[in-house]
Length: 109
Image (cartoon, rainbow, N blue to C red):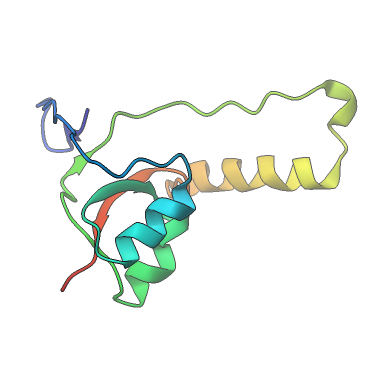
């Protein structure tokens, strides 16, 4: 449910799309092909938006905030790939630029 950044307003938006996938990459490809509008993690569309291939809409609204937890066995704490991923999430949160936050996007034209 999107919420407005300027107030506590909430709106429930029914979705009745025919295209259903479970991959953000497939959603990004559908957006690039002009299939419509979608909420998608920023990390998947940042370059497309910067290059003008996709545009954001409803910028004054945001999806409901979700918490992200990194849960892993303590013995794997030293694994470099895991440490890099956790650092990536923490750095994004500290900058206020959540790379997994959803943005409403579409292809113009």
